[in-house]
Image (tube, rainbow, N blue to C red; front, side, top):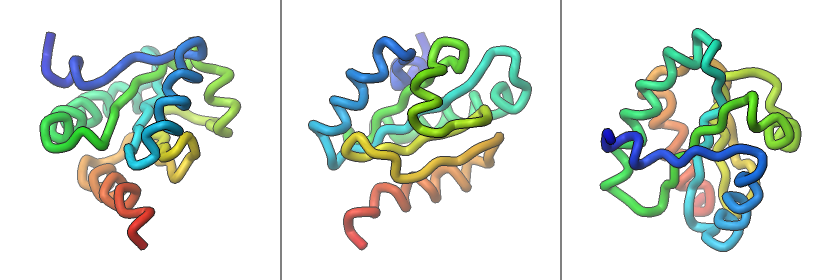
Length: 123
């Protein structure tokens, strides 16, 4: 098993509520969910970037948790957060959406967004 795979937990509609509860109970943590589909070309472009970022942050801090959600198994969760396209990265704090990025994004764009979301309470 690669380090990135160990740093990213798979969620679906059934386990999404538990993830949200975790976020509510650990409101200082940032949760990042990658909504994807196996047939989605932009998703395939984002996956190695998301894995690299997860691996980079996994050992730097315990304040960020990474998740992957197959759109085919997470339709209700996507609807609850008004996610209309994939890939979408959803950023959550305290069980609430703080931001999102849609489409295949460059690593530096995602890292900048992570840093911004981490500092959302400090502003």
